Image (cartoon, rainbow, N blue to C red; front, top):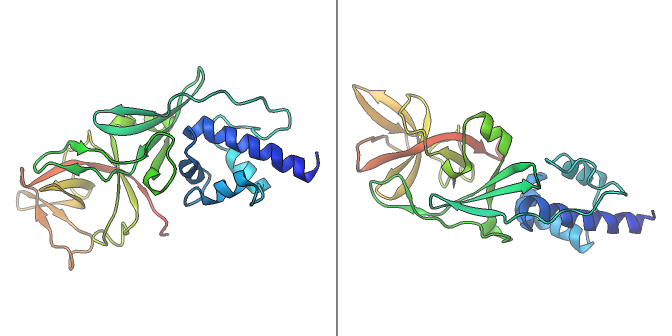
Length: 244
């Protein structure tokens, strides 16, 4: 094939891959292949950016996409509906026909909590097939979750909004929380609800009482874990960060 034909073929296959894995969500797909968002992927689909060998290899490394750009690759099957709403939290589960779920997408939520509660009152996040800043997600291979006994419906993804946990966590980091794990363990990091406000803190045991402590304690004083003022939401089980 000519270079033009190769790019045309790759554009069609890239579009099919996006439909297959993320139900058309370009931003989510861009993050899967290592980009910050979907801007570069949109340029590739529009023909204003070359789909390089590096991009081809990154896409073909995703689950179910081995040899996806081969010249004789078959047409992609239509993807299943990409979103399920489980226990009031929007969760994306992408499946391959007859193979079960492959990747779970946990929308970064801006939902709020009722004071004294650990359940999400109102989840706001990515819409099915959406594309934009509101479509930010944390992505996990379903097998990886299964190996750790985790379900997508039990997870919340939150964005750090301050430097309270520096140098361990930074503003802008995405933390994923296992809401089924609220048993306090000294030294572990948890998300907590302080009168309706999200907190991410490390637990400390002092004189028989539990405290939520910041890794940056000079600016962020510790808070006693006393229900219903402060309630544990769950333990942080994964961190996504661009700070090395």
